[in-house]
Image 1 (tube, helix red, strand yellow):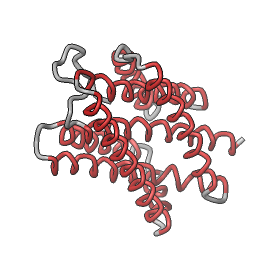
Image 2: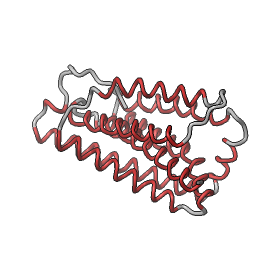
Image 3: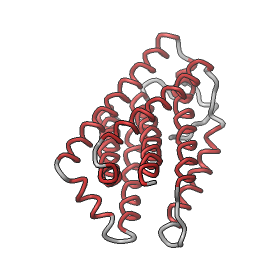
Length: 237
């Protein structure tokens, strides 16, 4: 999710209809490729047994998972800078690819845990279907209303800092981020998907389709993470 200047000149919304349609097609084509690569990489890593190893690693110490999250944030920042840079297309694709790989690695422990809890990978398919349905609904709202949801940017930024603070605090304080936190994060991630989709229509400049795909991919991955957590909570109960 990237913050935009609402007064920037030369955005896609100011271009001819053919240019706008071409930008949307390229963005969602790159998003589909990123999601496909993520799913394929995740399947290979899980089948190789690395999921169990990753779960054991993050369970080995209280702060191991915090360090993993910190590393992911650094990689995510670097990937976003590459994708949003005015550098060559190759550098932008490198940013998108780097982010997809980082997401696949960060998802390994939670997917391995979900499979262990339920005894099979069916829960992963359920989470994917639910996430896809939510994304489809939010995308439909953005494209049919064509409303500019840029006002969500400030709300999401504040909400993101609060969420990060609570996650960090949970490692040091005797608090548990349970079901209601996951529900709140699903709402947050849904808002991010709506915001990113709106930006595809109103805020990006032509040629930024790789960056647009990365931003939307990141929001969908966040949504998938907490949908999966909710399904895991139901299965535990």
